[in-house]
Image 1 (cartoon, rainbow, N blue to C red):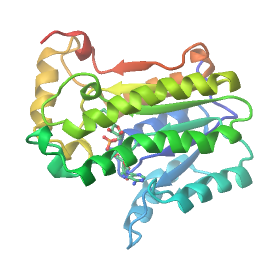
Image 2 (cartoon, rainbow, N blue to C red):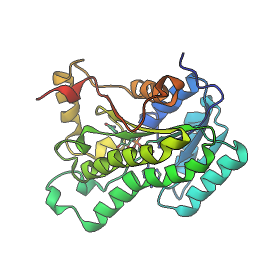
Image 3 (tube, rainbow, N blue to C red):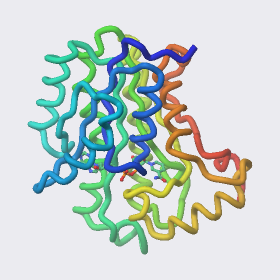
Image 4 (tube, rainbow, N blue to C red):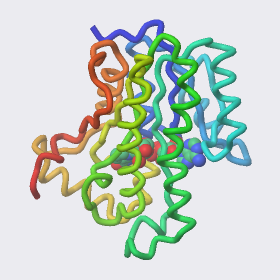
Length: 258
Ligand code: NAD
């Protein structure tokens, strides 16, 4: 049975009710996990208020600001986990960023700063958060990140984010190899295209969604809740033998040759 009772789960990347992280948080909570939420703070505190209201029904026992570009906030997030929970079982890494101008047009025109920013936030953050989680996962653990087909194949306009996701998927393998001896499993979910704040920055995302609806075996794309169910499975003992993998939750689109 899928049972996450007694598991402490930190979920990153909730921005609004369309966020994939929101689908994951709901399904982890439904399976019995104790939820902690980190959010990207802004100057006016709008994000904090919005996310706090959204996640309230899940009774999060931890709610912390964590900009992954801010070392102090990362340290403070994991210090709070240590203090309040004493151990961490589940880390959901569900965040990414690239400048809008780097998500359309010619890939060869990606700027140096845009490349560095996309890779720092979208890829390096998994390595950093996993490193911070490692000493707290004293009873083993499960780390799940979110990737996309554009990290494995060329998808129009995905550009710099494709490179970031390729790096992310390889980081999953290196992390899985390192952390396996501590019974910490590391996996990625490659989700089909879903309309969210982040995906709306990718040029032609609606065309991509329509294409998937026509071509994917299930003749549709997926929902945040379906991705959440897969994440709950990967975080549970049902997936105890699975690590270092990329699990496609994409209505089957990835198997198609057109
Ligand atoms: P979203 O906009 O809801 O989530 C992106 C999150 O990243 C936001 O919560 C944002 O606050 C956070 N973020 C950005 N910069 C950050 C920083 N410096 N520090 C901390 N957090 C930061 O969009 P989403 O589509 O739910 O994206 C979640 C993940 O899913 C991303 O990794 C994305 O690449 C991946 N993904 C999305 C799709 C899709 O079609 N939507 C498909 C496959 C994979």
